[in-house]
Amino acid sequence: MTKRLHRPLGLGLSCLAAATLLVTAGPPPPARAEPVGELLTRLQGLYQQAEEAAEVYNAAEAALKARRAEEGRLSSALGRARSALDSERAGAGRLAREQYQGLQNGGLSPYLRMLLSGDPQQALDQRRLAAREGARRAGVVARLERDREQAGALADAARKALDAQQSLAARQKEAQREVTGRLKEVERLLAALTPAELAGLGAREAAVTAGAQRSLLDSGRLPARTTPPTAAGDSALRYAAAQIGKPYVWGAEGPASFDCSGLTSQAWEHAGRSIPRTSQEQWAQLPRVPLDRLRPGDLVVYFPKATHVALYIGDGKVIQAPRPGAKVKVSPIAANPLLGAVRPDPDGTPLTHFTPPPLPEPSATGDGAADDRGYDTDGEPASAASATSAR
Image (cartoon, rainbow, N blue to C red; front, side, top):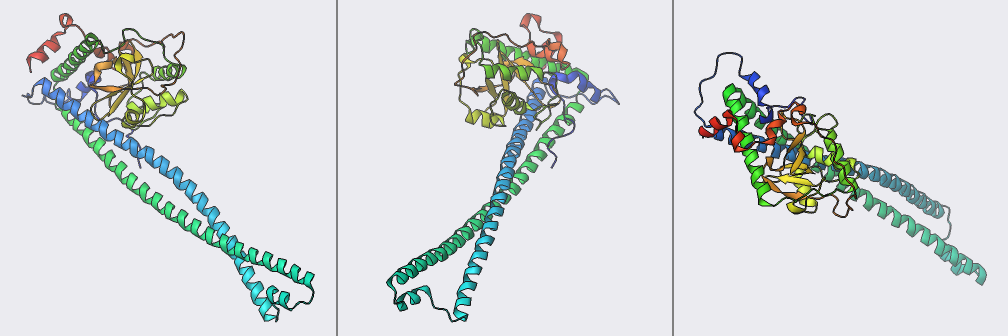
């Protein structure tokens, strides 16, 4: 099964300049009556649905890995159990042959020889031999039954593991179709837009992000100052910073490309701490932390279904793998609707001294990341003003 697309379908709004290539060739499309604000909402909705399906895909992939490992363990155990069973069957066969040969040769059982013996010591010896022989035979039978039951239980577990794998593979395939379908919708939508509409969408998104960031900063919900991370948090942060500029590809865990949770899970894996693969499981399993206690390395989770995640770097900013067509970059923490934050190392001790990793200038990412900085109303570009009037 293909784990990910070889090239991302769709284009992120942060690289809308590149999207104009889709519409500059051929006759211009007819004018659209849909307001820019509604276009932006629809496009963001498609991206969110695609990311939600991508996280379902990632969850199925992680579960498949676990099931494959379990099936391998069960298969090895079943092989050992069957070998033991064959050995005990061979022992039981030898025991049966010994009994049959004794009867065929007219031999007496040890118990009968003990009764007929006139020597008390010999009778005691015969009794001990009979007891030992009885114990040996009982042990052979007990081991045979035990190994038979163990082999049967392992065979049942292996069949169930295989059934679960097939179910997960079907779920993963359905999620793959969902992601591909949503991203094709994005392609069709962007291909139908004029360059002016694309520019308006980019300006509109920048204005919305800037407004959300100002509101969040003014609310006092973020820390007044950036506190030092733990050693693990610092390591995770530096790993994430080193990935800036690499492309988003859904289902990717590096090293050449990432999706949102692929970046955060790999950053913390690099720091020596394994965390769940998907944003939903990161939100569900890791300890929650209030926004006003955020420290670098914490994970910021977005949208009501926890379908997006980023790594906090301090000063109200995150490193994120945003969406198809975009690249790993630094963004305002309010670039997406906040759900909350989690901390992979709640028991860690913060560093005494912390020097943030060097970060590229927004324009250096080649992803239009300067749009993420937002702007004040007084400095709002004309394209954004016209986009606002088009609502």
